[in-house]
Length: 291
Image (cartoon, rainbow, N blue to C red; front, side, top):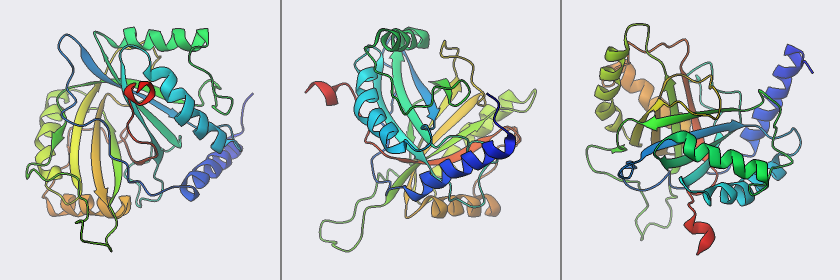
């Protein structure tokens, strides 16, 4: 079935409007603690799944994903942990044109000698019924997107040593800050990969000096059997906290304008995807299902 472009755009507008309306306060901690380095003899990957529910079945989709699907896959060897996120569509101007086709993101942490070993267990578990399919998940080819990225270094935290902020125990007025991730996908311009890598690493300390910008980890696309991805080659996952994603983005824009943070001039801005997401579950592991 071919969906007319005008109907497709209207459907996406409805999905994203629903996501914005149902957004909760984003106060879960982000990801696993520590530097998130691979254990000895293995590699560490982020397997990303971008998805939308079948229209009209969002509550059912979320119930299945959080309460059934996460546990079904985290019982598998090599599946170290996972966390779900909802897209933030309210930041203006949008940091990139692309990246807003899906309302939900799942980040699975994989630890294996190579990614396909873990992903093949997922395929077998779904085919065999050990991992139960969701009736409200849109399995239509092309409806979702996925990609597997390998870490290229440890998680980096603020140079001043400040961690996530919590109000003082005696403060009964100040709420906890909201927490988000910024998924920053980018590819180098042709012939500029070395310059891209150098600039990507050099700008990290200046970004992490900004208020609310707490940590980052860099990734490179891995070869994996989960299928080709339409995402750019490199990924930074930034962890941020503040009153809103808009305020955090405004802080970054002001730093770029003032020169305190430098743009990566070797990055292809035409293919970049830079989008904020809010956590809608805690980070969970197999231990959350077996204790």
